[in-house]
Length: 176
Length: 368
Image (cartoon, rainbow over the protein chains, first blue to last red):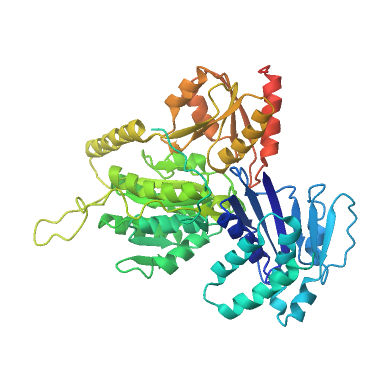
């Protein structure tokens, strides 16, 4: 089975590292995966997004025209990508920053107050990990253990960073 | 030679790393014994230069240099190759145009080199999105003069790694510049990749390279001669080598062509997209298949002619307005029926879109 997801937000919010974490987790599970970042003249504060495709078979295209899952970490992304989601898909909204009302009735909307929850942990930067935790739980595309393993692999010996990121992941995961 | 497509990851992933295509080329090149890399920045291949700066630049006896221009970079490759070092440069479409003079000189002096083109939209400065619009330039030599380069068309990150290794060996074996013709998506996307070889298959010798006269008679490697018959002999010698390459190194891949009534001819990222479309059309009972040239020069004429004995209808699919189709038509010399579907400018069509074109053709031509 092939699933595709698009993760979007401001540059600097960690949307690319979220995608990379999911891709790495899928690889650790022995599945085929492609990760494609939006590239070019991207800047901090501008918009950034990436597409991840996971499948047990070969993946034809790393591009997603109608992904099953979309994560919008900010308002512009929520507006831009709400019509891209496949009917029946899941739309993850960072409700701390997204105020727009989603008018589609054929998708499930998952509200995650990612920034608020990250601030409660004392580290606003880990909002992406809160979202990733919630995403892992609701989407079921990868195992939570693989996500943790991928995170540890990425951060290597930075024990302090691993701790705070893991806490954020767990917090997001336990939201649903 | 039949190209055995590297299998994408199985359940055991221990030795795999998630890597973008540009970095995978760089890592494979370093493992292939690359000594000198010269580059100049351009999107979408910057990760390659960045990886070289980080990893080749720190390796003992190796040189990384960001040149002042593309022209300078290819001429540095020219110099490095002349003294027997495995050398490489990389760029994207507009930058590759600038390198053509140097490539022509490399070809004239019978020097090995690897050149990577991660194609982007054109003409002109075009766009930074992935395209396949440099097929003509790559497969016809590219610069002035009667020469060819070997051109490889990978379609996954794993193949980028494998073909980079192969490119260095081919370059040394035939003393010829080899081009890896990728595109922006292949360069930017990350996929699990495994580096299968730790060392090159062919160890380059210093034979014929400039190592200093050491008190003996001086040797000169040059591309100019005022004697036309001398130059004619050089051209004949190049031509004989090109014939040998055609005979030995032509590589292609097929997918579900055995009972196919319609076969798509595509290379690189387009072949991969077509493969996805074929898989879903097969599930609906349509007998469709794929023919993929893996070496774009030499082009697999003979296997394509063989194929057309059993399949009449072909569909050439490219991310341009029709370039490889000319090689298909030349190979077939009027046999079979060739249709075309193309998306230019850096647009990446979805497998479904290509699938719809295929099924329309399938019914239109009465192949059912």
